[in-house]
Length: 48
Image (cartoon, rainbow, N blue to C red):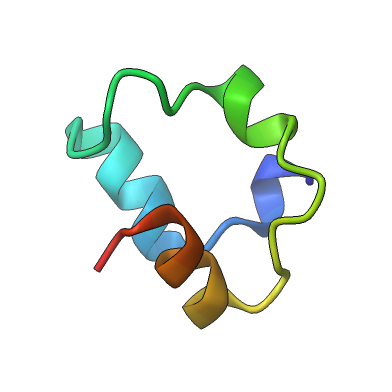
């Protein structure tokens, strides 16, 4: 998945450091089955 398709809330959480250290750009790009819908992305990645 292209990082530009991430939900704005996920990007904000990454910038603010509110995600686990394991959630790197490389890890996110490796998630080929991450949904395109922002609400589903938040559920899959456990970001409120």
